Length: 120
Image (cartoon, rainbow, N blue to C red; front, side, top):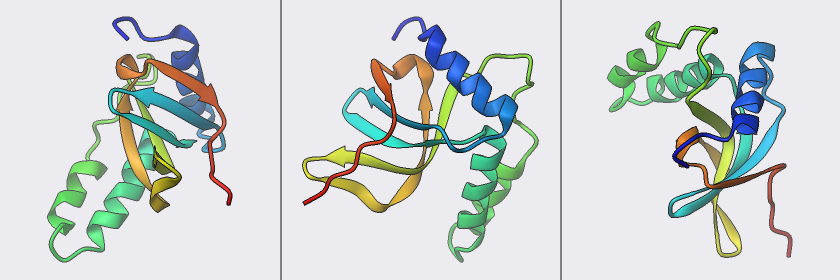
């Protein structure tokens, strides 16, 4: 999207202000459909830092995510931070256990509240 959807920005703003990670969302971005739960940026960054910190090879990168670079609350969010998220591909979600995705709101071409799951 050249101009981010105001309603989607409002949802992201509410997630940030309420510090809630219960809003499920599915988004369409170039090349992918991603489904998961929105998380406040600080919570998302902390979780990514924890995962990286637990790796011998990647632990030096964890400090990048704990740095005090979270935007000021007065600025509208520019990105969605999804956790327990999957890229929907055919009849599966990748990864099956869910991952951490950061998506620019301006890149979202369609979205819906809720997440998608496949059942056999």
